[in-house]
Length: 174
Image (cartoon, rainbow, N blue to C red; front, side, top):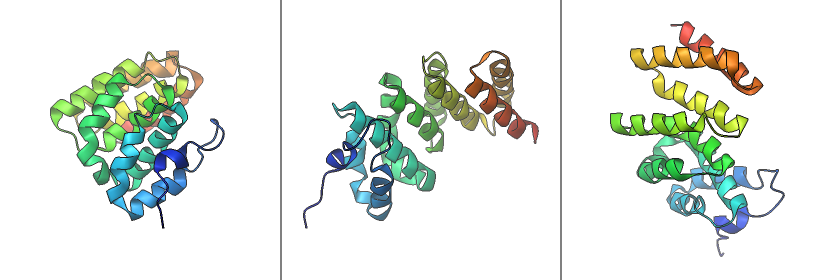
């Protein structure tokens, strides 16, 4: 039986839907050797394929972040250069799940800091989430993050304010 390429599976349907992202994620979790095919889709010429590939990779990262470890250099590079909002918001959630060196964490933090200036409220909100995840366990980063979250509670979009309140509670439980 011939395998249908992920790029073809991910292009079907309306842009406002996730299409077959859940099915592709399940397929990768069953057959991790197909992950490079999905990662390739993050650079597709088709913005719908890129968006859905990012959604799929993010879903995989929730359950098996280790699968993305071999791709972390590519993902960090893509995060630096991505301009598509849907790519950015999924990468903002994925990056902190990767096993990163101190230098890679700094690079990810810097990228997410830039995302706070994005036009998209979702990108900004998920950048806050990603930065909070990266800050956990480092006292000076946590202190900086608390300041940033407190500022976002006052001046951010409604989504940023809501997420910041939720994240602040996590930092204050310690």
